[in-house]
Image 1: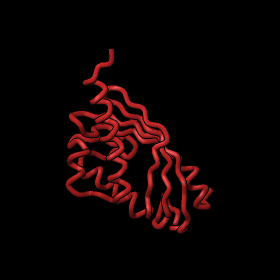
Image 2: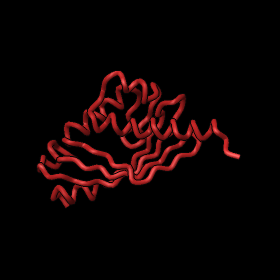
Image 3: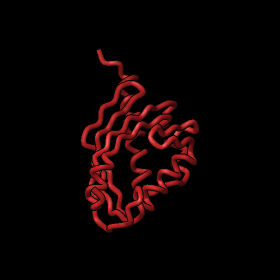
Image 4: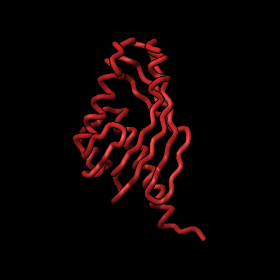
Length: 140
């Protein structure tokens, strides 16, 4: 027998995690942030916290890259965790790790792990193929 409460929560958590990526891609730092991101949010890659920390991530991504897209390739969810393997494509238009803008389209493999609490992302562990992106920018 399937537990419909867990199934519904898992589906809802998956939608929340994917909405999180949409906010970044759409450079959305408005009121939707409070709906998707928990006030006690922690980004374990950049050590940023709360709504303002998330907004800083959105701003960094969108001043470094234009036309940001995230394609979910695999999404797995169980209880309060959602994991997604994604492909980000974007145009490199700003400084990235000391690399001047190249105006090249780059593709970056990413894996995201989110913990959802009270319907919002409270923890995020992103793993980004930064070396691959830097290679495409001509730095490696």
